[in-house]
Image (cartoon, rainbow, N blue to C red; front, side, top):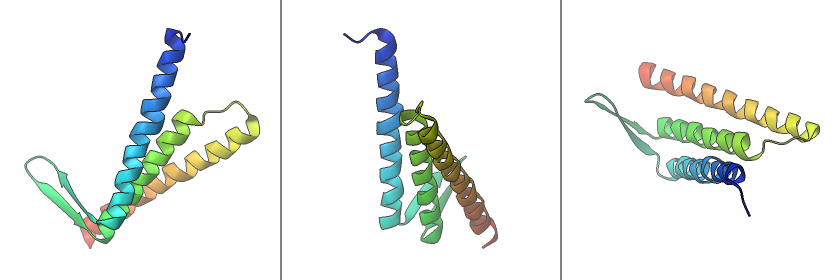
Length: 109
């Protein structure tokens, strides 16, 4: 029998650690194959094509990987903990790098 605490943790791991990051990873890969994305804002829209769309796809892919690592692979074993923390750091640094590159490409190129 699963109590409420275990059920909540299981739901968090399934939704926040598998389904949502899986959807983000799928969309990031989709942008590699079909490199075009439309971002909607306050009455305007920004259409990213080719390299800009691929950069956005890499950023979305890395966010999905970070969410999966952060939610599912939270481990108590010290050696694995160091490894997964290093992976999380690399993915989050990759996200920020892609954000800066996309920002520079959209505004200045």
